[in-house]
Length: 116
Image 1 (spheres, rainbow, N blue to C red):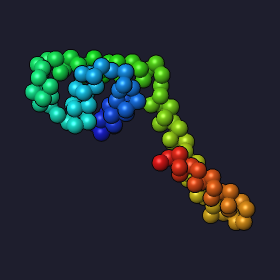
Image 2 (cartoon, rainbow, N blue to C red; image 1 turned 30 degrees about the horizontal axis):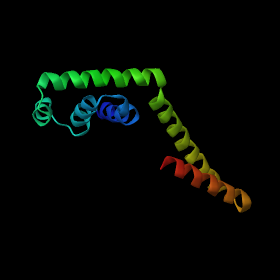
Image 3 (cartoon, rainbow, N blue to C red; image 1 turned 135 degrees about the vertical axis):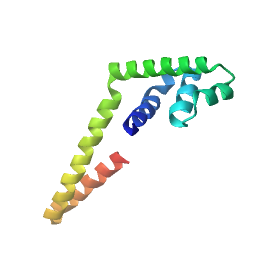
């Protein structure tokens, strides 16, 4: 379940600007703020069905954008690669000294900046 929430949040972060304002607001309140459909409907002054429709349309649009572009998949792949590189550099730093150690330190620092 947690992975699903994370993915929904990432979809909104990556592609949210492509949604209508109402879709973005309903999707954000439901998945990021954990409000019920009734709470969102009351806050927005629309019907519960209207909120449901906005969320479903937003979800479909976000999923379609990810299917077409794969930005989140590539982001995750890159992050995993950087984390693996960080581990290897950590091992290298422990095995080297002198100029090689300095270069390993610089590379590790660069990887850390990319991960932040």
